[in-house]
Length: 238
Image (cartoon, rainbow, N blue to C red):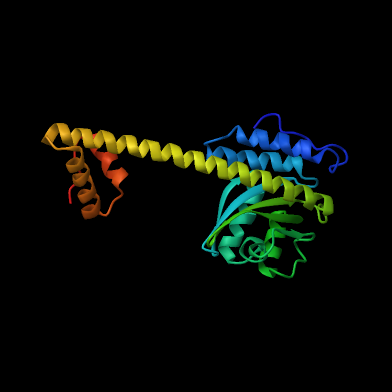
């Protein structure tokens, strides 16, 4: 991502203006979820005082941590570590709080196994922010510094505001992507119905019925059946 905004010398000065610029830049990635995730990580490092690296992870079913975007191998490795050992900020306190701050990773007592290994990977201090909570799934933005005590109250304030803008941009990208996917699926199904109507002299309802029955018999999604028919000219065996 280009032209990442920089914070002023006093990060609380003109904070609203800076965050608005960040929000506009994130929205430029509209419809591209992966691009938005990468843009969030890059902008967060520039926007939040003390941040050196950033990673975004999804927590699936409160148990599995899935790294989705990162600025370097450090956040990817530390986020993945939580999944490996089953403990860490994304799997614990962040479910109950909007932000979790760790000033000294190595001496952190809430997750002792995670703390020692994360410190060995190079993490000195970290902050985790909620991006969204959907049922048992969560999105978290994790900021890292190699030094101990890199984050302060201003860092936390800026990070919370940034996370709010980032969450809106991410939700917008996911919504637009779903719309595009839905339109593509409707087009595929329409094309598949047309093939069946022409080939077997069926009505539109009858052609859709053939697709629906094939989907049920093969235990595959309707749009996958339509995709195969339009690509190969054949319905899958069942």
